[in-house]
Length: 385
Ligand code: GAF
Image (cartoon, rainbow, N blue to C red; front, side):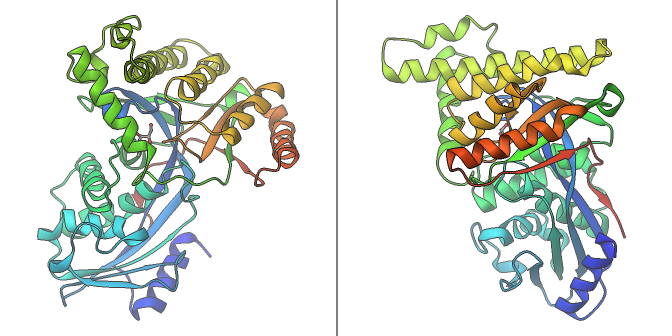
């Protein structure tokens, strides 16, 4: 049975009727450009083959009913008029936040069944897959005047204002705007973008994802701290955003001899060098026939996230070091950090050796067994039934 047929059947079981359609939105893996999006910088994600599917139908009783195949005992039903930040919470906050952001268009209410296979809490953007699948459904059913690019902000508002996670636009843009066979080079300041061809198979390469099984949560803790530190660093440097720092020596001005100044220097240095790494990777992909040449730039990105941004974990560092020992071209942690996944760029002939080495090393160290799988740049959000 197809994913669309499964979603239709689950919708019928949950609500006793047929959905008006089924929409799918992918997770993402970011090739490079981490923690640059809320600093007005550059990102370069690819969409995953893993998606969230939303089977959706409009209602007339003014209620939003939300059911998830992944949380079968947690059915949520709320009047549209009573939606408010944090109510409902948990997984349902993402689709509810989208309905809230478009509440003028869906006063009659909505039934939504979601079913997904993007690993949750693993830095692969399962939350954007969830919110973007529902946002695209709502656009098609009730807000045809909106462009797909407008949905980036609808989904971001759901996450920032309703769920309370202070993220940028990387994940929503990736889920909505990526295309198969390409990485999305996006300037998060002016939203200009370019689809950069990324045919790894033709170069004999693969992207291996290592899901460490250590979950993160962007609505609490370190992610918001990093965002505040970046804002402070920009203010002290007298720029609107760290994107505007002219070169990698400029953040040195933040080091005023205090521990706080030293921290802000590290944070700013990461963002400035990471923006340069995105431009470098795009240049390599545009100008050469050798995508393996981006490997060392990815590995440098990991070192910067580990040492300057200080958001890696022992599991992520172990995955990266082991992948490189196994002959990978490059490796780095992905996403918001404090857990989650790493991505490895590796010669296809070495992929299974590298995956086994990482699994064995995790067992030796007593870490939770990782999940490893290869991904190809896949299509963005679309209607599938
Ligand atoms: C998370 C956030 F949701 C993104 O906006 C981005 O900041 C990313 O972490 C780090 O690059 O996925």
